[in-house]
Amino acid sequence: MRMFWLLALVCVAPLTHAAIYKYVDQDGNITYTNIPRAGARRLQLTPLSTISAGTAHANPGPANFPRVSTSTQEKRDAMRRELLQHELAGEEGKLAAAQQALKAGEAVRLGNERNYQKYLDRVQGLKDAVLRHQQNVDALKKQLGE
Image (cartoon, rainbow, N blue to C red; front, side):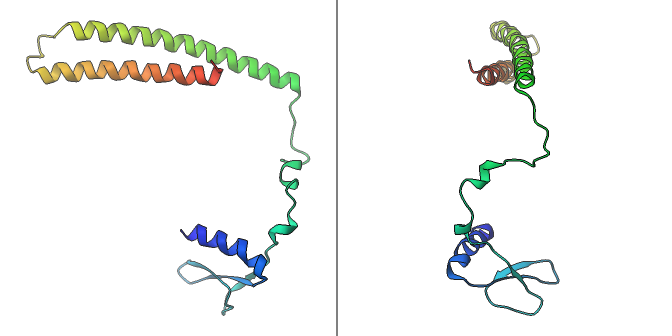
């Protein structure tokens, strides 16, 4: 809630041309106010109207920031896609194995499962494994755009 009021204060202050002060007490609590007080520091705020809309995206990084060539990025993308496809194939195999284990586990009640809840707990663990692998497969397919 403090961030909302701070944002509102910062946005409205330049429109009203009011001075904004920042005060930090001995406990480290920060207070923003339009009333000057001892120990408070006046903030120099730039009105929003002076910030052009195009400057935020014109130069997204520092001038000396290393750039990657298109061919290098394409190679990286191809390698990433290959890794994701390999991961997907492995996860689909694990999903199939988990589905088989669930089918076999549901059909048989083990000797130590006289208590029906033990059977339900074991089968639930198998169902959870199937669900986990299905979610992994879905996430990988989403990353691959399938």
